Length: 125
Image 1 (tube, helix red, strand yellow):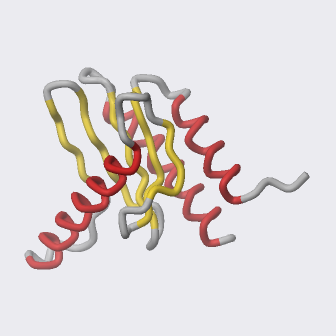
Image 2 (cartoon, helix red, strand yellow; image 1 turned 90 degrees about the vertical axis):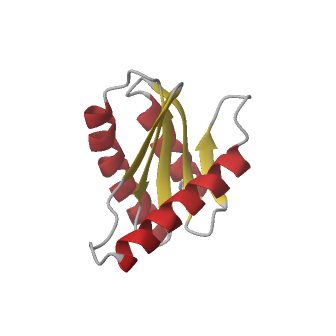
Image 3 (cartoon, helix red, strand yellow; image 1 turned 30 degrees about the horizontal axis):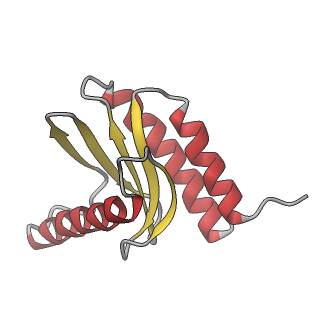
């Protein structure tokens, strides 16, 4: 049986969670629509998606205004964890909410790999 795009994207997120130290993760359209997510009950995935899209959009606007090139990642450190966003091709964003003491370097490496997979799935390459 052939996997659907949705199933493939769900599998990407499930394997990403195996890295550990991740509370939530999602694939979001650049417009802020939820594509796929793995979130605990206390996180509204649709709101998380919309906010992450807004954050990346603001970072891209700032980057354009300051002529610093394209945005490769956005990272927010908060009291109770980190929010990390990276583009997954031209149409999607891979987002994650990590534990406070998460190894961000390892998570970013894994996110970059997973973002490539997401891009391939969404663009059919």
